[in-house]
Image 1 (cartoon, rainbow over the protein chains, first blue to last red):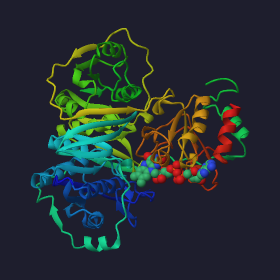
Image 2 (cartoon, rainbow over the protein chains, first blue to last red):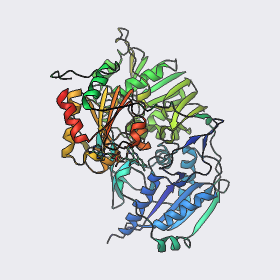
Image 3 (tube, each protein chain N blue to C red):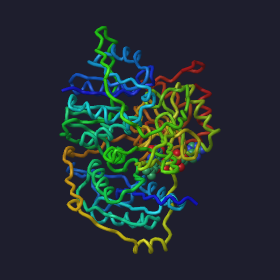
Image 4 (cartoon, rainbow over the protein chains, first blue to last red):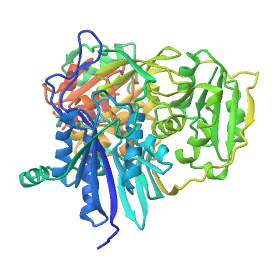
Length: 262
Length: 311
Ligand SMILES: Cc1cc2nc3c(=O)[nH]c(=O)nc-3n(C[C@H](O)[C@H](O)[C@H](O)COP(=O)(O)OP(=O)(O)OC[C@H]3O[C@@H](n4cnc5c(N)ncnc54)[C@H](O)[C@@H]3O)c2cc1C
């Protein structure tokens, strides 16, 4: 058994459940999240699962889960604790924090924690930014491995396979490291009821932005939010022949004639 | 002020995504510099200097840049920030990895996946898997944007005779802690997903890697690129970089054929801006039909070979 005694921090976000389709508010000021089912961002769940697997493999021995948000994000922290994280930290923030805000908050937390591995989801399914991990790595001046589909930790090094345009790229980097998770890294487990009960007794600290001496950025301002152009449902066709002739007469595409190669 | 574009290339040619980013940058209406970082790039840089619309080509040539890592590139690019009001990258895996690292070093937020430039500080970008479009104002002193290439087009100008100036950056290579181990490229002679006119995508229903030949055969008849749903990629039927969707590639070809794909919101996010969408699915209730221009309720193993045979 490997006894590396590494410390991991996983940052998680409470977001709209991935099965729910969001609606835009009538006044176009933002999306309407009232009475909407909220969950842990799926990529964050993958990050928690990976940390727990590293712990089960004897590589990591302490997992801190951090979420930045209003009080109800404690629900998602409890879910992560039920999956196997050791400690939770909520950073109270009632407005939407930008990726740079989150990276700065995590940088502050790192000053106290001295973690070896940061695991974050590659993007959150609400703002779809795909930025926070890279920003955190820049602020910590440490290497980053984004869109990870395989992680190996060996002798204070991380060997990570990344999903990139064109295929897979494997890189090796010294710890500490920031890793962001892609879909194929693992399949998160479901928490068993006894674990959910145990999670209620795990420590969950709360800090404010003032405790961390953080002022939120203001460089990006949300002006309005609109619905995308609606696509009309089209025509149902009855046969392959009808489909081909319809496509041929639809001036927008060139469909090759029989025998002629495209 | 000026705009800087960070080029993506394969040593011999610029990627199509970089040319599209140039198309977007021209809408900002200010002089454009192109940074090419890499190894043995002098020929490439000379070629780039003939592209209309580029004022200066900045080159940074070093053996360690043959495979460029964001850890090396970001500090050097961040140091150029006082000269530029805008730094643009394509929203590719390279651009998404690099742009936020540059932005954090500049102390500003970045904007991901810009789909419309309203003015030099107002933009539109999709959020919630494209189910909402945000209009945002960026007041950062140096704005860092990634460009969703399916929403813009490359400039159509002929190469120009008045060459852009090529200027070699003299910078020290930052120490990079990252070591390259290996790369597995999915080689394909088919068109690239993000520039193809026609895409044929297969879903979970295709059933196996071997069965995907049904999709490939049709794609080859049509001269099309091949894409897939997450379920097909997760099941190992096809390479990961061919996933279309919220968290994969976002495409907008002239014709998108969704074969045995149910039409989850995450998949629709990656293809619903295609000009013509065709869905082939054996379930008349499949949500994909609600965005399709033409639908065919059929077993894909009958319909697709029949289509291939008739083309
Ligand atoms: C965080 C997150 C991110 C995601 N990102 C993406 C993404 O980027 N891209 C993506 O695609 N998905 C993504 N997904 C997954 C998405 O939610 C769906 O699970 C996925 O798109 C389903 O793939 P599918 O349509 O191939 O499979 P299914 O939903 O299983 O659909 C298969 C379809 O095939 C039809 N069928 C079955 N047999 C036949 C036959 N013989 N002939 C014809 N039709 C047949 C069925 O009627 C069904 O409609 C994401 C999910 C999450 C949680």
